[in-house]
Length: 311
Image 1 (cartoon, rainbow, N blue to C red):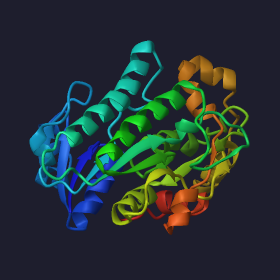
Image 2 (tube, one colour; image 1 turned 180 degrees about the horizontal axis):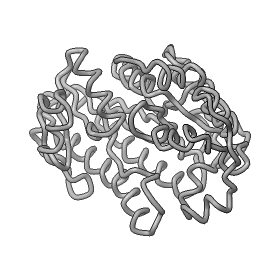
Image 3 (tube, rainbow, N blue to C red; image 1 turned 90 degrees about the vertical axis):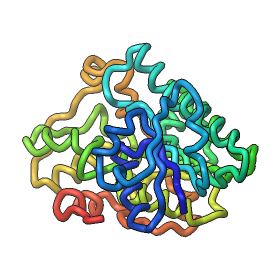
Image 4 (spheres, helix red, strand yellow; image 1 turned 45 degrees about the vertical axis):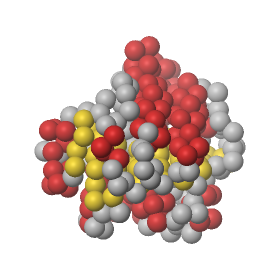
């Protein structure tokens, strides 16, 4: 299968690219900087690479030649820094305009259009929902991130107008041995300074990197799967439970909590990302028959921090 990817230089994208290459698939990569991507890994060096600025225009037409599937993972990091108005614009435009231009590029293909689009979204779609159990049929929230995710998904869905099967992966916090949220948490916890955030009662939708990669592979191989799919593990926990289990895995004590007012003082509006409660269940993935490698947080953290998975 020839697969076109965006976001292949990120934590998730890099792992997906490696897995697809291992499976014998041919990769085509859209990237802002083809030369930098070439040095990212042997897999990306071997891929066909095309320069693309997501906010400006559709990708080059030749990138879509013979493509059997598109995996769209590109987007400005949400937790990279304080949410200034400029940063919020970049977060939105990288997703909404980027997806709009990607789908426009798919629509312009003169011969057979790519038959499937596996597109990232996020559990931010649901907003702060307290104890409400959320599945793929739950309505969106009303926050800034909810609105971004709703628009983002609308742009992806437009690919269904010309016959492409669209899967919308609403991804939770991806736990990876390198990069992402877990890497940022490790130092304070290893120093014995890790503590819950705010009340700790907010639900924390997480997923092991191996399982988000597995879900993308599963979506590619299952032509009946379409629409929203929650990319979270079934063993959801609260922030307080996550803190306790992470500290126990590292054999460290749990320190004092970080008060909500302090989080808002340090990070401004972005504090909503870690304080929002999203009790999300992977109902669609389970119903379709996906078997999670790491359904519980204990098993995921043991694998990542005690005996890291290899491939």
